[in-house]
Amino acid sequence: MTKNRFYALFPAAAAVLLLLALLSLALGSVRLSPKDFLSLFSQNTSAAYRILRFIRIPRTVGAILCGAALATSGLLIQSVLHNPLGSPNVLSMNSGAALAAVLSSAVFPAGIAVYPIAAFLGAFLSLLAVVFLGKKAGASKHSIILAGVAMNAFLAAVTDAITVFIPNTVFSRNAFRIGSLSGIQLGAIAPAAALILISLILSFLLQNRIEVLSLGDDAASSLGLDVPKSRFSVLILSSLMCGSAISIAGTIGFLGLIVPHSCRMMLGGNEMKKLLPLTALSGSILLLACDTISRLGTHEIPSGIFLSAIGGPYFFFLLVKEHRENPS
Image (cartoon, rainbow, N blue to C red):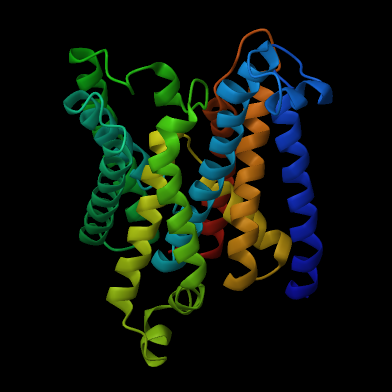
C-alpha cells in the first residue's frame, strides 16, 4: 500500500512543485508573463530580467532548498530521537542557529561563508543541550520538549540582546527573526545551499541506517548497528541542514514538524526509502507556497508568520494526540 501511494504521490508532488516554482517566478508586486521569462536569455538590461535574476530566482531557489532542508531535518530528529513532537524549532535548534548566525555576522561582517557553519554549530550545540537537559529531567518525550521551550526562551533573549547592542548586523532585521526569504541573493546563499545539498545527499545515502534507528535502540543494536555513533552522525546532518536553512531564510518554525507527520499520514507508513524523498519535496512545496502567497498583497507578510499560524495549532493537536496515546 505504501509503495503504491508513493508512486502516485511523488510525481504529483513534483508536478505541484514545478507549478509553484513558475508561479513564484511570475507573481509578486510586478506580474511577469511567459514572454518576460525570455528576457533571461536576451535582454539583460530589461526590468523583467533584473526582477527575475536578482529577486524572483533567488527567492524560488532559496524556498525550495530551505523547505527541503527544514522538513528533512525534522524527519531525522523524530526518527533517531523517537520523539514525534521533535522538530528544529521545538528543540531550540532554530534559536541556536539564529544566535550563532547573528553573533558570527557581528564578528565577521563580510564572512558570508562563515554564517552557515556558525549556524550549524549553534543548532547542533543547542540540540545537544536540550537532549541532555531533557534526560536529566526524566528522559521522557515531554521533558525534552519542555527543555526545548526553556532553551528557546534563553537563546532568543541572548539573540535580542546582541541585536540591541549591535543593531547593524546582517541578521538583525525583523524579517530574519520571523522567517522570510525577501532580499536574499544567489551569491550570498551559495555556501549554505551547497551544505544543504551535501546534507540531503548524505541523508539519502544513510536512509537504511536512519530507518533502523527509528525502530528503537534495542532493535537497532540487535541488528548490529552502532547506535551512539549512527545517531550522532544523523544529528550532525540534521543540524547542518537546519543551520544552513536558518542562515538563508531566518528562524522559520514548525515546517520540520508539520511536513514529516503529514507525509507519514499520506503514505500510511514509515518506510524511510519512500518517506525521506516525499518529505523533502513536500517541505519545498510548503515553504514555496507560503513565500509566493506572502507577496501577493500590497504589503509582504513574512513566510514565518504563515507557518507559525499553521504550526501552532498543529503542534497542540500532536501534543494532545501523543498524551492520549501515551498518558504516562
